[in-house]
Length: 202
Image 1 (cartoon, rainbow, N blue to C red):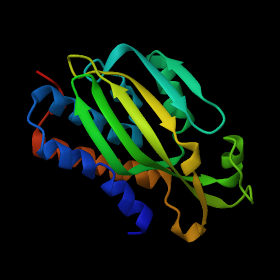
Image 2: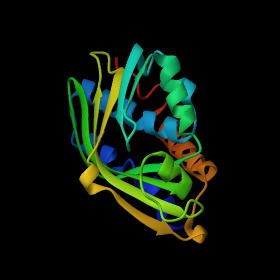
Image 3: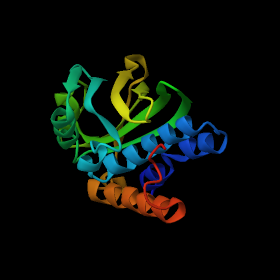
Image 4: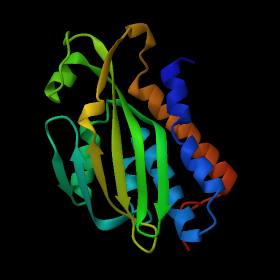
């Protein structure tokens, strides 16, 4: 297993650690929703993200990445956003995460394996459009939730002073398909451990 595969496996460890210290039922449900959401997103199961047991009827996303910030409203828009990045290899690391009645705040390192041409399309600089790069930046994820532990949206803010871009040898690359497999493994493990509907607040 290479370092990028391991990082995808480990991306939700901070949530598990916070769950072990969290007793409030609403807060636990929010964290479980957050964790399931990340695994569903990583495995391409976008229809389950916008289901009524996960997300409110009219979610609002504010995404500040690169030179092209975006405002996305409604479930169809959210699915369209996810489909636009479905072939990307994404994961988070180094999380400083907190949960409260209103939702989740998470300062993290957002990681992406990306081709040079796609980097350029996002407004970043890449020496070669055909090479592959590891794009990292510190970001603040603010995810508001309602009183039923349903996601109301995502506010994603990039610290542009923290952007690091490093060329990656192609032998180290992992595919979006492999990332999806890892997230599906994690979902199966959680369901086996916790039973059906383990993310639903009641």
